[in-house]
Length: 335
Length: 301
Image (cartoon, rainbow over all chains, first blue to last red):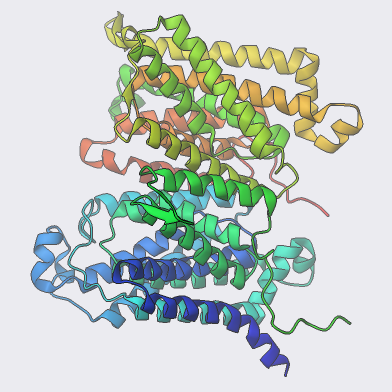
């Protein structure tokens, strides 16, 4: 019974993702692209939640692992014949290989997870602002290396010729898997220990919890999830270094904070709400009508409106749209 | 001898010092607001960007230099006060993470407004072009702006030190950055202290805008964004809590990136961010409380 009640915390975000996926099948093909995009964002934001939400430590570096996942899956999926054209300086041992869709995404998670572990080993000793700046440094270094290291990817060019397998189905399934893993982690012993260190570090340490070890586990896991999301992303559109850098860092962090950083439900709601707004404004820039009033927004309005709305949500509801709580259909009986 | 090995000449050295001086000013601007508000202002670079656009517009309209400077200061100061009133004040009691993300949003907003108004190609601010010409001092060509930047930064820092050490409002500000609640109990007016810090920080942003537009006259919406990221790293590196370590951190990172840029061979200079941020991470790991902090003791309960 207790377990069944707990599962509803998984059901709410999962149902929302399924609903978004189903809604995507009934709209026009051009609108469908926005739904697919939103579902990949859900995967990225849930990966962020796994570390930031549970640990309370802000990380600006997670988009590095999305980038590493995208690079891994991208390099593995470009057809062998087209590799010399897209990546002329690719290391020799990488050239003869091409893997299938699923293998490339799984390996994206694995490689990103290994990188996250290597980064976390020294970095998880830091907290607060020092941790924030250090993770920012990781993002800068990753961006810089991917941009100029042409032995491991296309450098400044975009990943063209990657099979575009991330349709509505793959994006929904990917988001669901990421959500399920994040849920299982949050319910596990490790998730609870990490949240204890978030609520009261001194008390947790006094109770024998190693803050370093718990953060290390969460950072690695969320690196794996971010890598999976990156794998989905590179199969969605031709990714380049600038599409996995500051803008994506900002928008995904904003999604997390707007939804409510401390809950899985908040992460999913935030990702879908901001994506919906983003898509609506993108369509409106090409002309739209609202309540019979037709208008064209000048190009670029989208970002202005989004920035303003984000600031507004943060001021009016600092703990996010969901208040950082999970959604329960049957509220817990108060004792 | 050292310099010869690292392949650094005097010109690189003066340029690096000038960059360090400009970054030190930005570090003070960010550090002052952090002191009283415990808020890391990521949107500081966008204040500099707004000032730079004001200079670009002034030079496009053919305004004299003094009018351009007045316009630059006016734009940046009005914007900083608005930022304080509309965003910082309502969020004052929130956690640092939320305030940081809020300033992220403001930065994004200002950048996209600039993109909407001026386009991605940007504008040229050419009023101060003459400062880019070199003067020759004992056989070394030095651009006038490097000397101006170092002198202006030094003057600003001295003036600021006097303000903090010798005036009542400076005393209030120092007290507030040590312990805001206690300072308020003792009769320090919170809003006045914060407004002063925000205004001084804005004025410094305007000065930085002038210096940076001389060095890179092309003003684009992402103007000063990279500099802000590097300065933020420098400020945390130095130690965020007190103004002197923060300033030193800003200077150190500007100087280091100038020297690295000159010392790295051409085929490696594209990896400058990697070298710089690796150094930042290593220093943070060794001294998490800051390079110039007195101690890094864990907070006791």
